[in-house]
Length: 265
Image 1 (cartoon, rainbow, N blue to C red):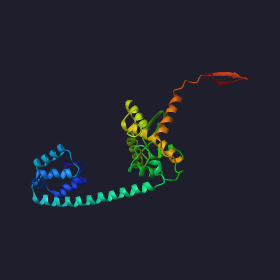
Image 2 (tube, rainbow, N blue to C red):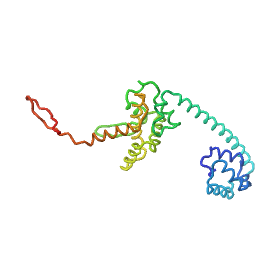
Image 3 (spheres, helix red, strand yellow):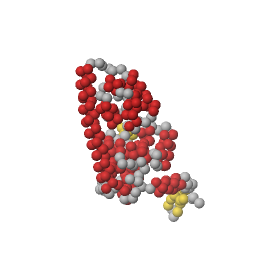
Image 4 (cartoon, rainbow, N blue to C red):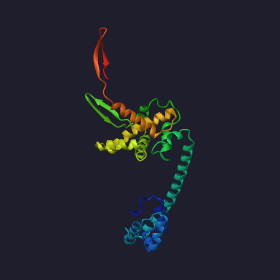
């Protein structure tokens, strides 16, 4: 079934229901095959023609009728089970989306860049409504596994990622960092800057997720939705403070005591 991107997809199941065996598919007219692919939103002519040609030239791996009949019967049963499973998953997705939109924290997570119908419920579940669950953003960063671990032995020190953590939660923040890139200018700039320094892709995404968790935590604590422009202005002010002229300090003696004085004009 190399003619389909995923063997469990609807188009693959419908194809097998129409033509359970290779011989039946090869007996079908080329126009019938083309119409089938077009009806399943596979409209690229070159892809359709390639599939039709490969079906025509395919060679069966076995000619034993008993094996072919038994396997094709089993495949049709699996196709029907997969259809039921896809419908059940779709019903779950609709229910989750409906519940997420009714959740009191939805207004906080929905405006976040890159958060769609899949990530919004996952972030809501990560935070919850109990505001004293996390005392600081660092607690959430460590609990989720995004914050690295500093280990030491004697005079040696090294950093590794956290193994003991809820893996799905860590993956949630990792995926959110990735999806935020097309929607957040500062996140994309940070990603490009770190990648330009030669840092691995996943390392940069975890570092970006580390930043996003701090933002998410503050929005959650303050019950205020995220605003890209406000955060951009805060970054600009912080950059101005760090690039301002250095403070000139000097030791001075006053009333017999030494103290540091600021000589910056």
